[in-house]
Length: 107
Length: 120
Image (cartoon, rainbow over the protein chains, first blue to last red):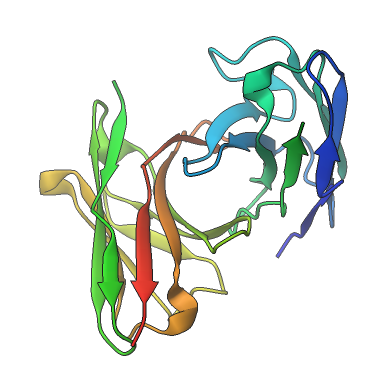
C-alpha cells in the first residue's frame, strides 16, 4: 500500500494567517491527490482533487499544489470556519486509496 | 441533490453480527462506486473497500479483506457493510461515500456516518 504522511500533525494559527500543510507519498502518485476538511462530529468534506483543482463551491483561499510525492495545501487567509482537521488521500492506480493521518488546525 | 443516508448508531456485543446501510439518492446509484471508510476515535480515515452497485464488483483493502463484507442492492439504491463477528476493535465511526469516477476518484459525497459500539 502507498503510505501518506502529513506534517505537521497539528498547527496553531490565527484568523488572517497563511498556513501550509504538507502531504508526502511513499512513492510517486503523479497528481492523484485529494484533500478533505473535517470538523468535529461531521463527515469529511471534499475540497480539492487532482492535487490542485478546487471542488465547486470551495473558497479560492484554498490552494493545492504538488506532484509526484510531495504536495501542499495552503490556506491564504484563515477564516474562523477553516479551523478543522485536514486529510490528504491518494487515489493513484489501484486501491486501497489511503489517507494521511491528518493535520489539526487550531486557533 | 446527491444524498447518502446511513443507518443509525448500533450497540452490539462482541461476537455478534451487524449489517449497516447507506442509501443513495439524487443520482444514478448504479453508475458510481460507493466506498466505506472507518474512522476510529481520534484517528484519521481508513479506506476499507468499494462496490460498484451496477454489477456488485467489490475491491477491498488488504487490511479489511476477510474482516467485513461489502454488498449492495441496486433495486433499493442501498449499499451495506457487514460483520459476521464483531470485536471490540471494531468500535468506530463508519462512513459511506461516493467515488466521483472521473479518474481521480475523490469521495465527493459522504454519508453522515454510523457509530458502531461493541461492548460486553
